[in-house]
Image 1 (tube, rainbow, N blue to C red):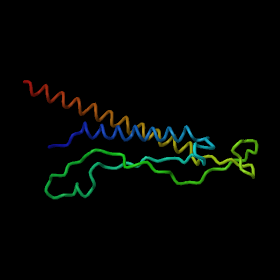
Image 2: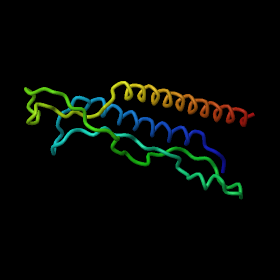
Image 3: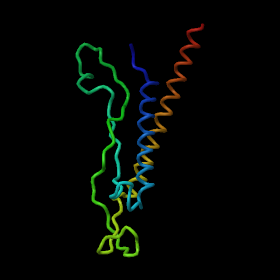
Image 4: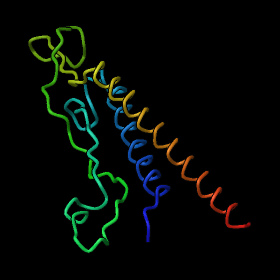
Length: 142
């Protein structure tokens, strides 16, 4: 059994798509002062990693093969809520401050661009793997 570049690229595409969804959710809730159930929105981060652990790749028998990527979970990003003085806001506390999520717009946009580039790179790798497979089939016909 050999390395399957199509499966590896597809798993990476899935992970990066989910990462884009989390980033979009953070950006959409950047100015949300209250969520259902109370409190402020907490920015999220997608955690991903290899399907197979690193020790499996170090096996001496040569049976270990590289695999794809997978989502390990979604965790709450560190950081305190930012407080903005707005006494007229319905969610203002007794001192007139409103708590908003600690979403760094510039950092989220940079991460979104990076994620989009990784996604694009995996699309290219997937297309090339499919082209190589088709070429191998054509050669095999002769």
